[in-house]
Image (cartoon, rainbow, N blue to C red; front, side, top):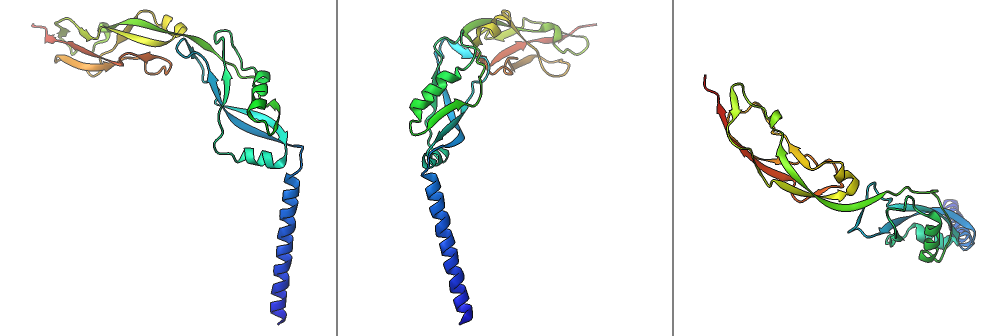
Length: 224
């Protein structure tokens, strides 16, 4: 009997303690004045047919907010948060993200809590004009690996002979007007006919109309 009574008493104490904790938590969450750092997805709006960012745009923004405990809790566990839109009207003249303007936009975006400030002072932005430029494709004939006493005995055919690249104006202008491709492999003694990848794939900002060209030529042995 004493054992059963002790278990009943412990159960009652546990239930009372749990109820007290729940009451305390709910009462605390009903109060105002809490502050918390939260992250929101960020979506940039600009004319992407005319301009291109030359460095990655920030995907999130961290903000210090304050308000009712329940509201902050709901925001912290929200799963379907709509991205905050930030408009860039003059990309070439915009060098940083205006956190003051963004804080005002956030105040309209999350009305049930107060936006105190954006945590980062600034984000650098860098845009360039998006242009298209045509390049001539040539084979770097001086570097073709030929076996001793073998020579190229025909014209070097390249198809297509020109490709169009789209990307930042400053990058494309710095590339000149010719793209040279190199013939891979060991010393050749047979005719060559293969596709070669253009040496531009390392720059993710540049989009080519074609990323490969077909190259063919004949190889002959010099007679003694």
